[in-house]
Amino acid sequence: MGILTKRDGHVEVVTVDFPPVNALPVQGWFDLADALKKAGEDQDVHVVVLRAEGRGFNAGVDIKEIQRSAGYDALVGANRGCHAAFGAVYDCAVPVVAAVHGFCLGGGIGLVGNADVVIASDDATFGVPEVERGALGAATHLARLVPQHLMRTLYFTARTITAAELHTHGSVYEVVPRAELDDAALAVARDIAKKDPRVIRAAKEALNGIDTQQVHRSYRFEQGFTFELNLLGASDEAREEFLNGR
Image 1: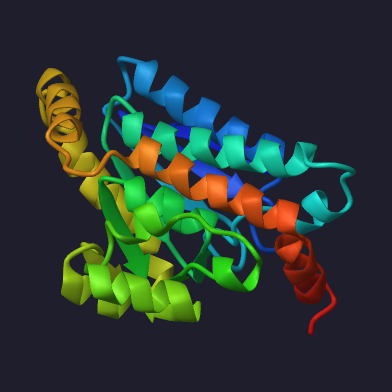
Image 2: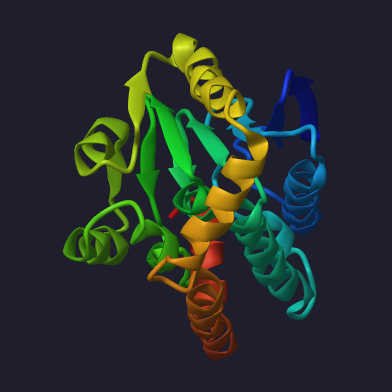
């Protein structure tokens, strides 16, 4: 359990495994950030595949950890951990291929929205339930997956969108049966890995450099409203309702 890594030729496979739903605790987000950073710093790594075990790719932050923690330490930790992990995907020195299955919610959108290539299984769904949890965040990254008005609709309603629908918008490169997901992600990764790594690393830096969206700053701006909602009490009420199943 935790953040697992293994090497497949010049491909580093980073696996998230936090049963039952891959809702990451604070340390889990920082561990994921560290694994991605180390992979990019290794000159023998040409590309990273980010995948998950279990029922779904990612269910966001561990709300139970936040609720059982006194004060705001866990909330601040989750904010900083998510920012570190999302940024580590974006800033990774080599391309990151996200292999998504099942649910991809909240923090999962932050990871996938910053990935370079997204491969998804045909059972994958994507969404940000933040407004129902008394929080804000990941709109920055959802906006990288869908057009602006659709992003706002999904955000305000907390609805999800399927991998097939994202494929029509071009943000999901390929949709495959669940059993073929890992092979499909590795196939794309190996294709990238065959290229001159000097060129690919330069290309990753260049593409980030011409990006029109400043993902680090805009996500931190969103997080400020999350903390404000906590001070007002709205977030705590929403989290308790969610944990109590109402």
